[in-house]
Amino acid sequence: MSKAFQIRGYFVTGTDTGVGKTLVSAAMILKLQKLGLITCGFKPVVAGMHFNDGKPYSDDLDTLLLSSHYSSPHLTAEEICPYHLIDPAAPHLVAKKMHIELDLEKIQAAYQILRSNHQAIIVEGAGGFLVPLSDTTSIADFANLIQLPIILVVGIKLGCINHALLTVEAVQKRDLKLAGWVANQIEPPSDYLLMNIDYLSKILEADYQTPIIGNIPYMTHLAHNTYSVRDLNLTNNYLDANLLKY
Image (cartoon, helix red, strand yellow):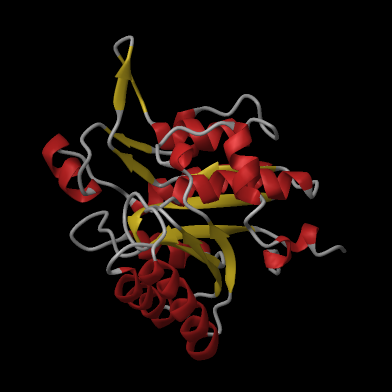
């Protein structure tokens, strides 16, 4: 069996919200599809939606569907994400305000339905790795349930070294496999920001056996939340084709 057909997918987490998880996740969906794998995206919860003609929509889900539809053209936003929350805030707080519970079993059930119809799934987390779903559960608990190798997206900005190292330690504490990390230059480059990438590349490889698998340069037209297929293919040019190991 080829390496491609051993891949079950990846869990994409980030050092924070707004660091490029959706961009990387959707690009990776296209990458796996080009290997011949029936692949889609999944997001356990989205918090922060807009309205179009009176109907709520999410930029994140629209982007994941854009790439997923090449494999599964009839997938809906409800199928790839069981919880749609309007307010842009921590999911567990929005859920409390709405008097609902973000149930891990419901999230896992939605994921398993996709699992049964796809060869690989790219799961995009919500916010950072330890974002709560309730008073007792978090995004990390869901990652632990599905046991996909993890890719960490680091938004390159002031403070990213600390955020990256804390996230890596949280992942490894749960005995989850880190497949690698992606540097996403979300601010105009400077000497110090580029030095951050160099430092993280060395310490994550040496101390945590986590290689850099992508370095996305700062591009003003990618500094938004809605992406085209061209944007996703451009992003794939900066992701290592050899990242697909699992």
